[in-house]
Length: 339
Image (cartoon, rainbow, N blue to C red; front, top):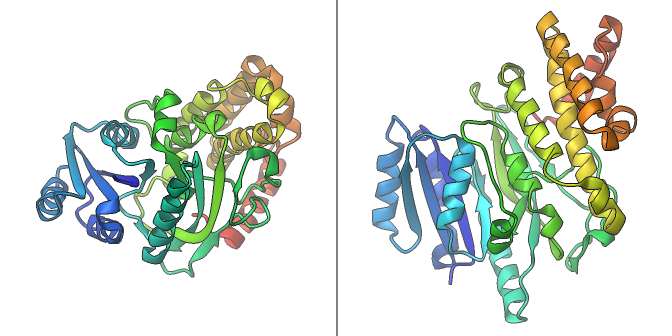
């Protein structure tokens, strides 16, 4: 039985995919590694096939037409046979000791006839030329125990969960009716957010499992690239806003609501911030339209977004206010080294 299915979406990844794959192979026959070649034009497909030939009981390879990162996630999910589903970007890698720790954790719960819905681990920014920076959840999640949303502490904006920090139970993701649009960036947020209301049991494994590489100029998280792709950020934020009835969730699971409304607020913040950083007349017009959309289409949570979250700081088109809020962002960026 495979404990974890690792999906590795690959697009023109020949220069770095081996490091990623090799770091996962330490899991041996307890894992499967699904390499999704998303219409690459370099040697990515050949390298994937080489690994499949060498490790036929561990490696699966899917060759497909280019559809974007989200299509790689969905293709991996369709093929996954492991109890848990984990997406690893092809330029990132796993910590070997942490992988063994997480496998042991899964086996421990299996022996009790219990499968956790969500396992959370730490991730580490491996920023080119800078000291690694770890994002952990101590003080937010209980440690070394199974828990529910009701036992979670407050999240802060620098330590919300992202795709890199989670292992979902595979069948739970399938039950969530996850749908990810093609040729769209930043859809890892859709992957994380969609199944959340189905999660009942959580375990925080306080180990630095995921090594998140930052530094390539063409990365989707590069600030200049993000500004150019701000329409993609807006698109994804709208998908999340329309995904769940947050006020209904608040009635029965207030702490889950708090996490989800804060997550959505961060998505709105990022889109509004990028438009503010751009500062062009076109971008500022989009900023006005974006907040108009939020007010008219999501009036139930607009008050939170506009007045009770940091996103509201980036609702202004006034030159002086924009200058002040951008300066604040630069300070936070320097401290937390997130891009």
